[in-house]
Image 1: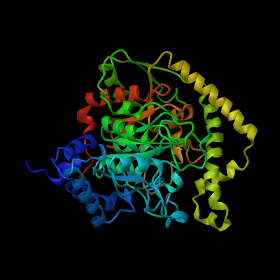
Image 2: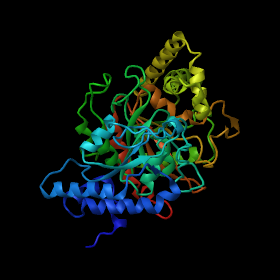
Image 3: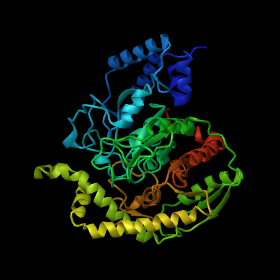
Image 4: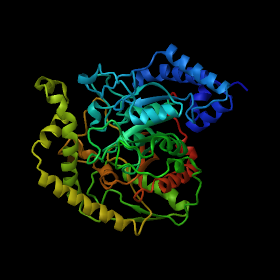
Length: 481
């Protein structure tokens, strides 16, 4: 049977890995198929940037084939093309952070995540596009321009892992890495009809890092078109590291095992729009509630639930933490005052606000965060999983900076329209965005499932059961793919 390039690009990462290791296809054929797909679709979507030249990549693929011919395999990603998010270092490639101030910076060594993915056999073909400094859930910057939604090129891809989400949806990658502070693995997954998982705090150690003791709200993690691929990549990314003293020491091989389970009897708490607190565009809540019926059909019990703490208090504490952590990331660029003209206003706002914070304010916000975490623990005494829409708006005009209003309510910050994603982050909980389907506008939306503390595996098993029950919907492809 002849296998076409189109066939190869349709496979998920584990299927591709099996085909490579069984010698059904060669690493060279996989690379050729991938580059053909990138050449065909990336000029419009702009998902993959800093692309490595084809001759270099094909030579690397040939070297992987030679290893297999000798009976040697580096791991499950052996010969599989990957593009690393442009916030993470890859030796010899530019790490621009989407900033014109970093457009010529070439990393001298791999970051920990890229190091682990390469050790499993991945071949890095380039980077995936991200917003400037990773701020804002809309992937555009002055270095590479905007990444366009896989389903409608006139719309935003989300962010900050927008390039990764689009590359997955358009079959330019079989699995992808990303990172998440304020929904950056979950929002673009929901907007591009793929899966994106924010692991538990400490599950995936990040290095290099400016701080490893306080800055725990951001984390790297996996995205994929199939939950089993997400879990498998997590098994590669996860695992303790001496450089990250708060990283979790659980055996990451747990995520490489079977995900089949019987979800019957699991209790799901539906947060919805928090009783009207969160403004949401029409159709989002209804679509997510329709997706929840699938869980009921699997024998789960779904009940509405309220947060155990006033959401405005959570938001005010979040603002302090966000500014305290983001401001110092921007500060090094401002050692030279002339750089201020080359930094986007949203990043400058975070920095300038952080300068007014006091230690007392941060400790007060930390106490609020502690109360919020305890309130979430109380909810998990009654529920196994919480569910909430992954976004408050549908993918918006790619030329807009951010939604100024949502459902008639003005947004008082550049990220208030993303408030729905903060709850898993602030409590350090695992959360996965699963495709909820499509609105009347034809655009995709995601449903976020939030698991118990360090309950990543149980969450993946439930998401896998959901995928198996909704294969027809989840397997839909973007136009032209």
